[in-house]
Each structure stands twice: as C-alpha cells, then as structure tokens.
Image (tube, rainbow, N blue to C red; front, top):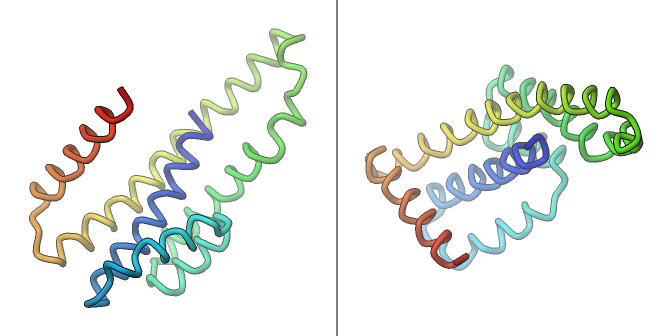
Length: 148
C-alpha cells in the first residue's frame, strides 16, 4: 500500500500538470499526451521541484511533497535492503509492516491534497464538482470493465 500510495502521488502531480496546461493553452489536445508522457518519465523529485516553481504550490504543500519524496525514496530504494530478511524473522516482518503502515497514510494524504488542486483547476474550466466527480466515476467504471 505504501508503494501504491506513493505512485498515486506521482500520478496526481502529472494530472495537475496536464490540467493546468489544458487550462492555459487553447490548442492543447494534440500536445497533452506528449506533456504527460514527458512528465511520467521524470523523477518524483523533478516533478515536485517543477510543480513548486511552475504551478506555484504553497510553501507548506511543497514541504509536504518533499517529505513524501524522502519517504517514497526510502520505500523504493532502501526498504528491501533493510528488511530483506523478513521471511526469516517474525519480529523483523512485524517491524517492516509497522513502518510501511505508518508511511502510506501520509502518501495518501499528500496525493489527495494534489487531487484537490486538480479538481480546483477543472472547476476553473467551467465544470461543477459534481460533473467532475461523475466523470471520474465513469472513467473508473470504464477502466474496471476493460480489465474484466
């Protein structure tokens, strides 16, 4: 769940870049996929630095994102080195589980804070929050049906 929520944070940042780009550019449809592909290939650290600067994130949110980056980097790059022997030790497994369970809610909260900014940007385009939520639910339904 920690890895999933960290990835959710990254996806939310790319969505924020995309929706902001769409609002600021009239002929965006042909360029949005390129923008998103480019952003998906960047590190989370670069996404955060660019978002702070280009999207004018608050200092508080930027600090929250930087903290999330440090924790995400630990999960991604150091967790298995530190806890690789969890199959051999019940106490180590418990410790690893506790650390991950303590981390993932922070990722979820931070991703949600970015999601709120995405929604706010979409509202600027003239859609209501109810319309946006209905669109999200329809996209999720379509996605789940395609996976069947």
